Length: 166
Image 1 (cartoon, rainbow, N blue to C red):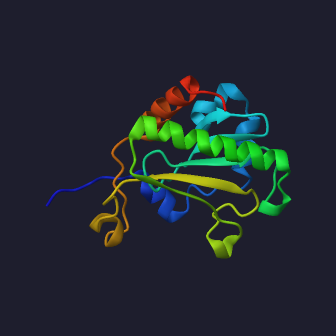
Image 2 (cartoon, rainbow, N blue to C red):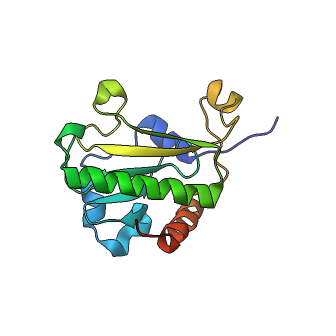
């Protein structure tokens, strides 16, 4: 029998990695010099993009406004517009970097809807490939990730930096 080691998952399963404050407020406030360790791949004027530390798939990013806001209907029109533009830019960059077959793009507002971070609304952009759900995720409750977050960061940040700004 082969073994697939995913030691990073244990911290998530046990809840050791639960953040007490609001990471969507705290991490961008550290400044651009801390973007790589904070997994922030792109900053806009009102919103930013960061990798999900516990991704559903390679390239899973989240788009959030800098302003602490937990409800979709409380975002300003400008925040909506920039989050939408950054989401579209991420789709283009992920297509270039990874060639996925499709995407899941969505917002989970409130814990009943599946929001892991309830008080700061964010949009998930998850690249998908035909057949990317298999026995590991269905039966073993484990997702096989073919690259590290550092590798994903370098690849995606590079594409985003060279892509158009609109």
